[in-house]
Image (cartoon, rainbow, N blue to C red; front, side, top):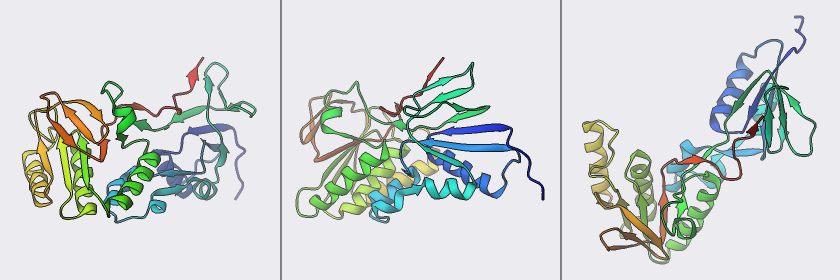
Length: 257
């Protein structure tokens, strides 16, 4: 079969799981005449869908990593290891330090998010955002190993779906006697879920002994505790924030000109 010349460039910036799935689908049904390029600072990327299973102890740390080199090779894509620093839309070029400009016809950006809480005093110094996932997974693995022989107190700030799932996973991993507390500023946990799903998850929280506090905004994170606005201190050796807030620091959206 005669191959069409490559006349169009599709460039994927970032190795998030959306782009990983795009590579997999491209491998099964490539578009003739299009060159596919992936730009990523690292040869692997962690898959966030497996994070609760890792926290619960079902998956080892290494199992979270997607092999972007293998995915790109399978898709017949060009892989450029580097960090995109800018996009020149007029010229149709992406700039990666140390490399010649990379031309594109269509560009997709999937550089990840962070769940840090910059407005909460002490969060950056004493808590762990669930994303970026790599740093969180490493911190959790270290804590879980140490917690086996000591205090097992965890606080999760935010009782949305992600917070509840991570609290359940933490309680399962740490086992009986662990103190896992969900701190929710609103009057109701899981506000975006239907009544049936919410009721079932609340029963699971109760079954695993997870303490749920609603209507209790966090005022600050301290060493070994979360301070609530009503003055109470919730003991915590590992405080985490699960909510997606913004794009990942250090992987900012490339500047467009």
